[in-house]
Structure formats: C-alpha cells, structure tokens
Amino acid sequence: MRDLSAELARRQAGHLYRRRRISESPQGPAMRIDGRECLSFCSNDYLGLANHPAVVEAARQGLARWGVGSGAAHLVNGHSAAHHALEEELADFAGTQRALLFSTGYMANLGVIGALLGRGDRLFADRLDHASLLDGAAYSGARLQRYAHAEPADLERLLQQAPAGGRLVATDGVFSMDGDLAPLPELQQLARIHDAWLLVDDAHGFGVLGEQGRGVLEHFAVETDLPVMVGTLGKAFGTSGAFVAGSEDLIEFLIQSARTYIYTTAAPAALAEATRESLRRVRSETWRREKLRALIARFRAGAQQLGLNLAPSMTPIQPVHVGTAADALRIGEALEQQGLLVPAIRPPTVPEGTARLRVTLSAAHSEQQVDRLLDGFAHATTR
Ligand SMILES: *Cc1c(COP(=O)(O)O)cnc(C)c1O
Image (tube, rainbow, N blue to C red; front, side):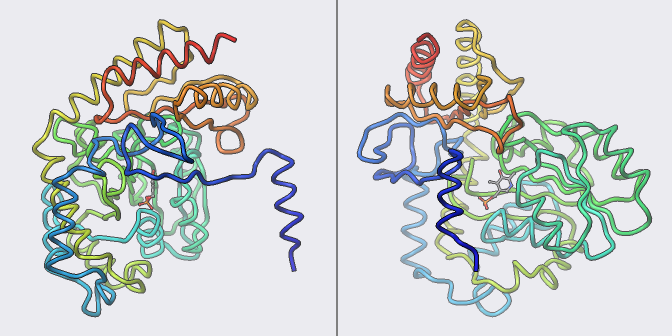
C-alpha cells in the first residue's frame, strides 16, 4: 500500500500542498472567507449571475415545483420538462440543432471524447488544454498527441503524420490560465482537411465573448458547421452543469453512448430552472458584457501604467506575470494582507518562469473595486 502520509509530507516540503479556504458568503466581489472580509478577483462568475436575485428566485420556484432530487438518470425518469426546455433554449442560443445537458463540464468532455474515440484513435490537444480534455484520452483509450500552444502549424504536422483512424482535435476556446483565445479559424480548416472532429470547450468564453455572448465561436464568426461545442454553466451562467451542442446525429449518438451521461443521476430540475433564468439574462442584458469589457480595459490601462507584465488577453482572465514562484507567493500574500484575493499560480500548473497572479474580473465588480486592486498591486510590487 502507498504511504500516504509520506506523500503528503513530501508535498508539504515542496510547497505543493493545497488547502481549501472556507467561504461564509455567497459568490460575489465582496466576500467573507476564512473569517475575513475580502475583495475577490478569482471567481469565474464573469457576469455576476451566481447570486442574482432573479436566478435565486427561479431556483426557489423550481424547488417548489419539482422538489430537490431528480431521482433518476435522464434515460430512466429523471429527464424533466425543465431540463428539456433548457436544452432547447441552449441549442437555440448556440445556433445548433440540439444540445445535451451534462452534470459538469468535466463529465461532458469525458463523455463526448469517450463516445467519439476508442483504442486506435487519436486525440489532438493543445498543450494548455483543460485537464478534462487531456483526461479524455486516457478515459477513451485513444492516443494523446499534444501540439504546441495555439500553434496550428504544429497540429498540422501531427495530423499529417498520423495513421488512418478516428481523430478528434480538442481545444479550449479561452485558455484558463492565460486568457488568450484558440486560433479557431485555422483549427477548423485543419480539422476539415484532415477529416478530424473539432471539439471546442468554451467554458470561459460562453456568455462572455461576442456581441450576443455566444462565445468564442461568435467572436470568430465560425459557428456554422462546428462539429462539437461544449459550454459550461458554472462560470458566466452562474449556476452549475454543462452542455454539448451540435447536430441532431451527434446528440442522439451521445444519448445512446456517452457513459458520463447515461450512468449518472440527472441534476436537479430546479437547477435547470435557475439556468433558464440566467440564460434569459445572458441573452438580454448585454450591458453585463459591456461593463465587463470596460472593467477589463480599465484594469489593463492601470496595470500598464504601473508597469505590470500583462498577458495579451482580451478576456476577464488577466494574468499578471511576476517571474518566479517565490515572487508570485510574496505578491499574492501582500495582496491578501490588503484584503485582495488573487490566486498565485505557480509551476507545475504553469511553465517554469511564468508564475503569475491570476486576476479574474466580473461585471459585478465596480470601477472603484478595480482601482483598489490596482492600488493593491502598486503596494505589493514596490517593497
Ligand atoms: C471549468 C472548466 C471545465 C470544467 O467544467 P465544470 O463544469 O466546472 O466541471 C472544463 N473545461 C474548461 C476549459 C474549464 O475551464
């Protein structure tokens, strides 16, 4: 048996030990965490919907109508009219024939990859893809081939060398640690030429990018005939869960064969009701995206004035590069002492020498709060 306590001690010695903070308030800019008031710049609640009164009320009414538990898997009798309506509304919003709900984004990615690929097939993944896409290779039995981050030429080389067999190219739409975008038009063209599926996981772009919030596909105007889109509901939508959008055949095929869809209890119907309300707001309240864009611009302008090393990101994910892991920890702690919560991201999560403070912004932040963050950086970086 493995000596777990020795492994834990090793992690502690290597500064790799992870601890959870305990929050005592709903998600939002001002929170009470580990007994202290703080201003949070680390959530994925990009549009400020996680604790929106109308979304909360929709969940409450959903509970009154549907109770708490769905009681069964979708293929047994857990698939409610609320789930079904949400799927139709998501497909309409995404501009695809159908959409299928999963309980989490992690399960959606495993489910799709496992349904489309098997032993002898290949999964081509960007080096910086989310863990759930990479894990899809091991889960499906397909061979994983990683291409250099956002480098279509490297993907092309791998596709040209690959023997015949099933192929799927999987990419994040917005990369979660860097905030940059996948080169979708080029990836789409390569996938087409080399007869590969293209899966775009737009967890961080859906609801945020594009005039209407339809994500990275709308941003690049490539939504037509994208084979597989994955969107998550726990980020900009402020609720929980995920969906796959695509053709009639793709969705029917997933219902028949995606194991992470079939062998799990349907999420509560009340949650689907809450997400329906949040989708209405994502669609109609364009001011949330406009405000978010203005806050991003304000943060970037202020950070540039301070001489901070910003990444080229137009999204709410705004990493500030600081060099070494020790620098990141020191600045993160100095920010925390000022009541500002910004996670320090260090190797091995990111490449050596690219340790960073990962700022995420939300439409729920105010201009004053962004200015407080900038002041905090000014203090934290001048010792
Ligand atoms: C957050 C995230 C996921 C996982 O989604 P959950 O619903 O939280 O399981 C998948 N892919 C990407 C790119 C993500 O950022």
